[in-house]
Image 1 (cartoon, helix red, strand yellow):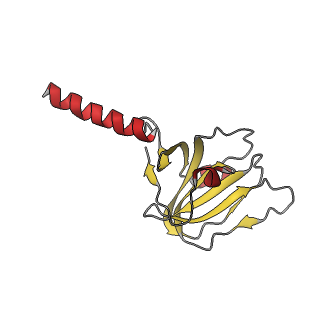
Image 2 (cartoon, one colour):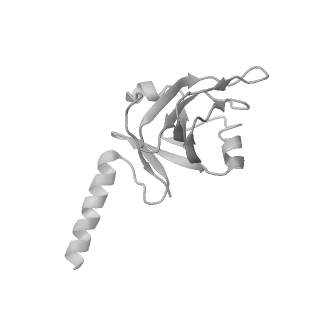
Length: 146
């Protein structure tokens, strides 16, 4: 019994190490070998605030917006200080739209970014990330939500 438990632990450790993502303690999103540790925005208040007023975002961090239903969810960059890649994801984990290197809003009213595609999740990561990792519309992401 102890031997089996150790083998299962070793396999689990190897798999999380192989993809570079330890999702046992924190919510994660990963694509191929690229892991992002994400803060969750589940409530309307959390989604409205998003990454506003952040001066820095580590390359392996992000924010995952979780919506109650799959729909068209436009975004904007009001009070956002850093460029972001905004990635819309459907309920099956498929990328349906990417707004690359989206710049902070410098005018009022802030323009909205409309994907014109239904999504259940939206992932915000550092601007330029999608190109750096080769992420494209149609790719599948694995979400581990805690």
